[in-house]
Image (cartoon, rainbow, N blue to C red):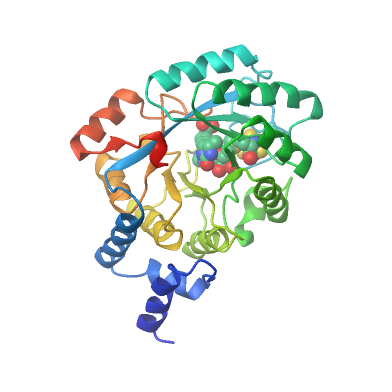
Length: 332
Ligand code: SAM
Ligand code: DTB
Ligand code: SF4
């Protein structure tokens, strides 16, 4: 098939709920002239979302550092010397107080992250109480706690958890270059448990880890071809952390990053594509291009889990200049 045919097939396939993306079709879209790619991404974006609204999520690390996994990008792995101080699971009331502050500052979704391989049974009561407490504030809840079995996912669903974040991080091929303590298949198993429990899936990855273009494309093909595309797709730009194996990684070229966002938008038209980690290293113009390419969710606040984020003042100034408004909760 020539590229034009493949492309039409690809763009057509974005409208059929059950169609699968091939790597070739995804690559044909990725490689379009930049203006054509952005035009198509923005057109699809407008068919599915208000183009001038961006959803705001707020992160809190409820258990920091000392993680037994060896993810090559992460400040929290006990395998690396990042200098981060490990802490115990935060008290429930403190988590709820932090969530209240975030809500009052405009965040509609509260994401709680723990540096665990998977939650231990003894931690589940506290985690459930956090979900119930944050939910009672009228916020959407999201957690990222590592691998979950079906029983744990069902318990979280019952507590009112809206989203679970669990990233595939990169392509299946590149995965073992970055993480050795769990497999790509382990990640997919947890995603299936989350989906089966009825919790919405938040799943994406990281770019700029020294992977090739084909890895970024394959990662998006895996995401788009899940039994249902994830509701939220965080695209993180690696924040290089000193003392980790990826601390010296070559940054991704900005236009290539924007292409990844546009491709995610085209392949998963109804998902929230989140411009996640790495915004402090992006210019305002690069972020504006990402919003034009279809990104419609960000993390707000001075810190992500352990690393820096632009902060409310900078983000509200950028939103003002771009005429972007926070998404209302009911529109999400
Ligand atoms: N421990 C849980 C897990 O790995 O599933 C949850 C927390 S983990 C920090 C959540 C995600 O943050 C990772 O899957 C990864 O995609 C992203 N992340 C972690 N460190 C990062 C970094 N230095 N730069 C960009 N993204 C990062
Ligand atoms: C996701 O994909 N990105 C967020 C969230 N899910 C949990 C985390 C980004 C972490 C960035 C590095 C840090 O703060 O340590
Ligand atoms: Fe642990 Fe998650 Fe960091 Fe991996 S990404 S080391 S699982 S906290």
